[in-house]
Length: 288
Length: 326
Image 1 (cartoon, rainbow over the protein chains, first blue to last red):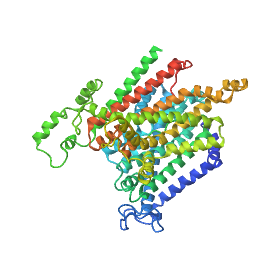
Image 2 (image 1 turned 120 degrees about the horizontal axis):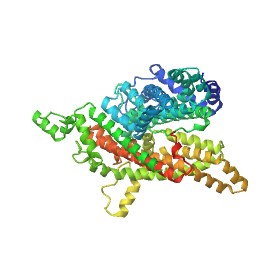
Image 3 (image 1 turned 180 degrees about the horizontal axis):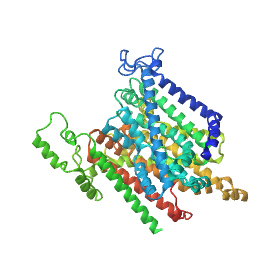
Image 4 (image 1 turned 90 degrees about the vertical axis):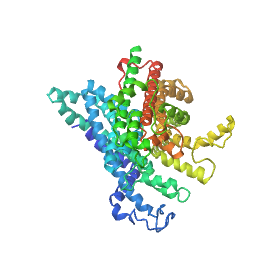
């Protein structure tokens, strides 16, 4: 078992329920997730139903108002939450799996593999993620599946670096030395003994990367690159800018909800991170 | 020392070369025949003309051949010829560069200074009410989507209060004299600059706070305090130690800003690298896309290289032989 596991479990509970900011953040994230999950039950109207009069300000009948085509904004935002969360967390998961694998291989095996992996990582980090994502999405087409692959495939370098630097320390620890002396193969050591120890950091990175992935997805939608079949917060915000003079709420409401969700994810990830490893608080830039 | 400098130079060159290669390949393998975009869509012209165009633009050659020609020329400053704008890519980029540089460098200066000032306030008493407030504020700032902040500012200051223009760089009606031009530029830059500052400040505050808090935790600070040095001087001393890591991160931010902050430039219609890239992607202008990537990568590598070298020269504590990447 990884040495961090049991410590992590206790600190995790303390990090989540010990701080007010964590509880609020968790409530926000769970709230948005539940609403997104039950979108078809909760949304008052079909998000594509354009039968209302356009540019109605928020009211009892339309709590978020209606948009330029007369669609109910609340329903669009609810369905948009689904897209954001699915893309955000799936992309983050892909990124973390790639990042952890590369980080462990690079840190544990070292040598040429490490050199090559780090050069590739650097190359990816030199260009802002959003810029690469825009190119990829415009060439491959912005279907939800492509979106997940593109954002996930571009988001692993930060995790790879964090995991690698952790593995550099871990591989010198006595327990790793002991299993090596017992004759465990490198593969076994990497997956059975090192992997569990980097899992807590992987969970935290999933949070951070999901936050960035949701922002990238919204950014792409804002630039007009989103699945035409699906609602996306970025797309609504993009539409809203054209109609600022007639309806400020079209852009401002989804924008505010998006911001609050990202803040909540980042604060929760920060608090857990501070509790588990106070030294790495802050980690790295959130470059998108 | 020389060996280290040499090694870093080679590494930087390798990064530029590899990424240029990757970008060129990806861009040229992308679906969509550029001929369609060159001819502007609509009714396709007769095949003879298409063949002639293909030849003129070098599109009749294979991709490896094109790549070889490209690589042999980019380091001499020839970035190719734009399909859409019908000028040299290098000229096109040079035209757009000033707007991006003005915006990036002003943001860089402001976020570095404000980041350090606010970071010191937070680091003074860790976990105090002020520190917690600053921490939450900095997380919130870097969580905001940049395009949302940009829109919010337009809505407040341009549409709501009518104080500032909604976008653009210079008003064509401004007389071509230095003072009116400067005033006009300031009017146009305030909103994009404020947006970028807000978005990037959060990160700089966090970096400064961590670096200064760490410096304040070192043994010599205890001694300085024990000697009875005024707290102000203790803080000054700690910030001097923290300056290098802070500047390092600030320089990374600068590299990032120089790559043309796509979303903010698009919202404000700012005529920089970001909007040029966006337009070229929409119009499938492959040479321009590749050229911008080359410039972005070049900027990043050079700035990071300079930062690393300055670090080594200024901080004799770093044993270069033992320098471990984190």
